[in-house]
Structures are given as structure tokens and as C-alpha cells.
Length: 477
Image 1 (spheres, rainbow, N blue to C red):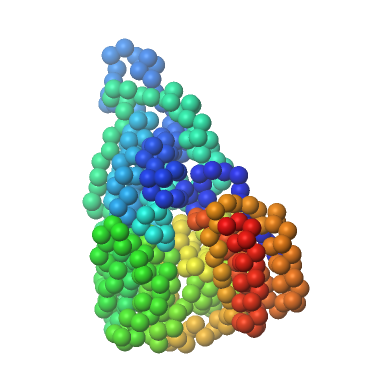
Image 2 (image 1 turned 60 degrees about the horizontal axis):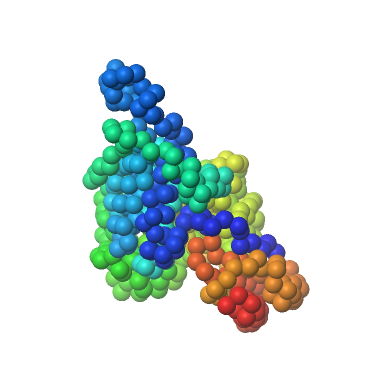
């Protein structure tokens, strides 16, 4: 069994920086320092000094232009997004870079805009599926991919040590500027529609869509409507406080109910920043990330488009998915938990499909990061190609019973350093005798320890998971 350690860094978790807004590390001061560090590190921009220029020559003189780095900043719909956005912009401009503010857009949308506009970096302000009072910062390089550990570590060093950044202060007309652009939703909408096969449309389909009162509330309904579907909208009225509140991918039962009520063909529940989705079939049964990965993998294998005939998942993915794919000659490789680690594995080996049980699904032939809208479109494409309802497609992926226990913790300690917990994990694996497994890790985005167990007998794995969770609570809470 793989165990996740707590790690040693102070800012970055498995998906950027995250915490309670206006408490460290999600304060305006830290955000401004992050903006400065990103401008300095990702753009690799030599900071011009006025003394280095010929007398009388302005930095932006047309005869000798000085290139300004450009950084895109987007956000979801949280109230605290205004505070973090302005702090980031201030830090970016203070380093002589220009800041492009694009307002509420999904995380994959920010990655797309960064790449499309040939910007030097992109920053998304979001705490994804967390409640409104949390916020976070995710950073993309110029190619639209999330940062590797080494670059995050360098940004973190500059933020925490501060001294190096404080010596880099361009003045006068070397200071950067910020501007807001309003047409990015249209750009992203056109891109998303272009991913759907030109010989197909969604005419005659009814879609129940829950945008979690988050970043997808504008663009997601338009994508499906402009492809011809009738859309029943839910979670499209953000007020800064209701993001992920009893709606979206964390509460798929809500869209499942709507799907049945309106006799929709499919229900789509996105999370607050739109990078993942959970589906409902026409009967109101939930279709999770593993099933989405599985049915898309089978479809792509049939079409000959599954690169390497391999799928990348994480230790959280169901063993039933692995066995189903194996029966069809498809290999499943597990990367560490976190969609960016899935992407890194995919890029390293040239794979085209990967994702997480939570609904982060990555199609590297179309997107650089998980995109809930893209995942939903790919499933709907499979429905169109086969002529089968989602309830039939998902039957091809037979999952084992799986249970999860989340334990809120007040201190972090590597699981392997907890003797009683380690003993219970070993005993559980012995009891399951190869017909199930246990996975325990500390969350990289929340103060939680997560316990997952799966096997043939639900009552058995529930007992084992609860026992391990109780030991963790005693040790860390």
C-alpha cells in the first residue's frame, strides 16, 4: 500500500496554494508576494534598470522595445476573489510585468487563455470544491500546464524569504500595468465547441447542468445549448457565498434528482472551478470519474485513439476499473494523487487519457488540464456514436464496493509515523487477502486525512475503514 507523507513545504499542496481566505497563507500580502515571485520566476524576465539604458532612451521607445512579460489572472466566483485578484495584480505589476485580468472563468479556461494569448504565465484564483470562505492560487506556465514541483519550490522560496524579491523594484515607466479583457468567454466557448465532432450535434438531447454557482456558470450552459441541446440550468446564480453550497460535483444527488424530474438524457455536475465533473444517467444513478474514464477508454480503444493503449489514474481509482480495462487489453497506470501528477505521467509517456475518481478527467489531445465540460462532451460523443443511453454505457465498467472516511485533523504527521494506524492498515490488508485494498493519505488541499477501502464485501470494508479512521482521529485530532 502506498502512503502519502505530509511533505515539508509550507505554501504549496497537491493543487497549488489553498486555505481560509484572509488567513495565512491566503492573505493579500502573500498573494502579492506570489504575484511578484511568479513574474520573476516563470517569465525569467531580466529586470531592466534605468541606469543600464542609454541616456534619454525610454524603455518602451519604438526604436528599442523592451518586452513586457504578460500574466493572465482569472478567478472563480468567491467573494474573496476580488481581494486576491488585486493583490496578485499589484505584485505582478511591481515586477515590471503586465497583468491581464479576465474575471470569472474555469481553471481549464484560464489555462487555455494563457496558451491562446501567448502569455508568459497564468494564475487561477480558486479553492476548487472547497466552501466559499476558502480560496487558493493555481499557477500555469506559458504552455497551459500546471507547474512542476521544482518551479513551485522556487516560487515558494522567493515568497517566504522575501529579501531577494525586495531588491527587484523597477520604477517609473518600467512598472507594469493591468488591464481587464471581457471577451475570453467567447474565445473559450468557440474552442470547446470545436472539440465536438463536426459531423455531430446535440439536437434532441436534454441536459441537466449544475455549475455549482462557480466559474462555469456563464460558459458551460452556452456550450451545450449552442451544440443543440436543451439545457436545464442549476447552480448558475453565484453571489460570492454560494459556490459549492449543496450543489455541483460534491453533491451529485442534486443533479441526479433534476435529471429524473425533467427526463433529461444526462445530468452534469461541475465543481466550483469547472475542472471536474460527476455525471448522472437518465435514471438518476451517479456516474463517477472512474466510470467516465472507463467508458471513454473503451470508446477510444475501439477508435484506435487511445495512445499507448494505456490510462493513467491514481491510487484512489477503483480496482474494478483496472480489472475491466485489463480484460480489454488496456493497461492502467497509477500516478500519485493530484491531477497534475496524472498529467506529468501522461506527458512523460505520451498517453492521451487519464484522470481521478473525483472527476478530474484529462484528454491531453484536447486540453492541458482536467476540464469538466470537455469530459462531459466526450461522454456525450460516445452516447451519440453508439446510440446507447448513459445507463447502458456505464454497465461496461464493473466497480467494486468502495468506502471513504475523511478525518478532520489539527496536526499533520506522516501516516507511517503512527504505529497504531500502520498496524491497523497492515491487518486490514491481510484480512482482504488480495481481494481488496486500503489507501490512506493526508489531503494536500484540506486539513483532512482520507481513508479509502475497497473489496467484495461492503460491510467488511466499512468496518476496516472506520477502525483506521478512528485511530487517525485519536492520533491527529
